[in-house]
Length: 167
Image: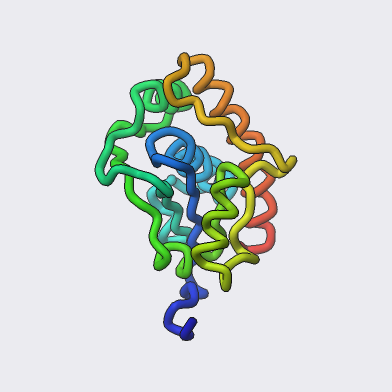
């Protein structure tokens, strides 16, 4: 990998990856934005100005699919807007340019490491307890709430650690 493929050190890029980029990873992206903005005392749209870029993608995403209605509803309950989200397929370029890649399951993490082994140290599991974030697709709104809660608990630890270390 050439030096041009490394992340820009002035911007910290955090990438969330799940399967379809319609439920878990976009919810994780939104929750991370909210927590990081709270930690930094700014608005979520000001994160980029603060040197933090957050995005999500899927290993098997259909391009430009909307977030699931249940994910949109649960994020609204948290004061977050996901209705404009459109899914995207993860690319090697995204992984190479990310400071940290948070995979929602161990299977996602392994697939990313296989595709981009030179970035294996920055590709980690979101669940700090080593647990996968279960896919709520096709489930009830309560299952989405449980998923968002699990994501939020893990992200609180990541945000605190990353921002304390200046990512």
